[in-house]
Length: 262
Image (cartoon, rainbow, N blue to C red; front, side, top):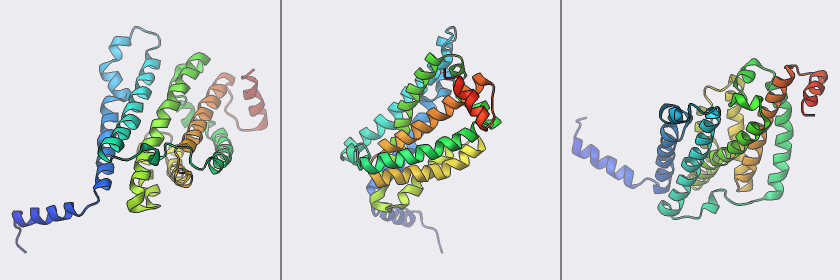
């Protein structure tokens, strides 16, 4: 079969015309937004372009994370909301920014948090978690810095949940139905690469579970509650383990670690 550029372009044009425009907008927007996040609102950007301006401040590491959290709130939340309003011309509320089924959402969140707290207790005893969390190491020395960091992290997680469980999941639901839960899970897992191995594999189930919660409740709020609670618990237990110098999983270790709170 002969290759004719004009005919090939014509066929391609016909294919493109038949595509779902909303799906194209969602996929391209996610690709562009994630690229903006990686190159301009990330810790990497701060380290390469802004670090020297704050290098003489003892809280430079905290500033780095604040830049990342607030920057990604803009890229992962504000930008997709603008796409929804001005490109798709839809109501952002339909992308999970509502209470939804709060009775189911609160119950699911409670059970999920209880389960994950048990898992986190064992996970934080692993060397890989001890070396990773909290991401900001100075939180282990100052409770003030710890709570500033966790507040910023919650802001970031809200935006993180919106881009995947809100913008992508609900944006693709009309075309792909429940398959959208699996589609949004893929970039979620990829972005966990580099984390402790158990966490990255766990992100497969976690991404699916959070997608189901959003799908069931029609809201991202319960995903934020669950994800935020899990990350806060990981950081808190990691700090308490560090202060108690105890990485056991038995009852005696639990008692010794709880004493650090008081």
